[in-house]
Amino acid sequence: MKKSRLIIGNWKSYLGLADGIALAKALVDHHVPQANQIVVICPQFPLLGAISQVLPFHQQTSNGILLGSQDISAWDAGAHTGDVSHSLLSDLGCHYSIIGHSERRQGNQETDAMLKEKLVMAINNGITPIFCVGEPLNVYQSKQTLAFIEAQLTAVFSDFPAIPDQLIIAYEPIWAIGSNIIPRLSEIETVHQHINKALQQLFPVTPSESIRIIYGGSVNADNCKSMIQQPSVDGFLVGRASISELDFLSIIVNSNKEFTS
Image (cartoon, rainbow, N blue to C red):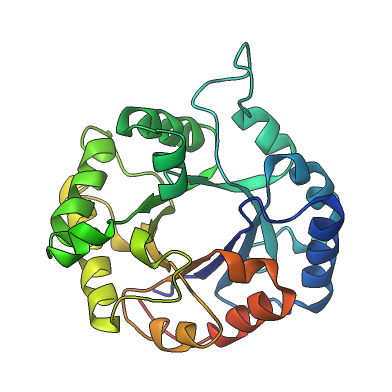
């Protein structure tokens, strides 16, 4: 069975209103939808309304450009100042939400318990979670990456009754983000295989095709060519390169390789 490759652009907080709209329009104008490939862009919260108006209705399909958020509130709409609820995200056309990015784990002190609540909120309300895992440099250097990531997964999924449909796990080694350095291809493949194995142990009755594991951390138009050929790499979570029209479109094109899961 074929899995759709996922190319997800995390704009972080780099773009303002005018630049964000201009980039979204350029992507819509120049992106050519491909079979078995899904493209998602995740702007800052204040840009979501404007960007949702840029994405034409005919592209709101599995082969077009879809909208995602960089986070989601752990609570329903209500008295939660500064949070953005799942209902508003859905109203704006967000199909995906990044949860547990290392920059939020570290900078916003997000705990496993908080991330689990966000996962449940997204899953129960039809928003596909992009759950991030990844190790710091000292863990990588001590060769404890697999145990570290397995612990991250177990902490949030250990008592889930069933795996959510279309769960996405993004492996982002913290030391690779923004460094222009990536793990060896064999290391990426080993980690992705281990993530799949850990999830199969947590959810033994879940078919593997419902789980997609993507890589993030200094992805560019050149290194994506070899990474997408790895059997367990189902796509990419792209950071800074996603705010360049040329770079992001190049990654999309260069990741469009035939593969069968």
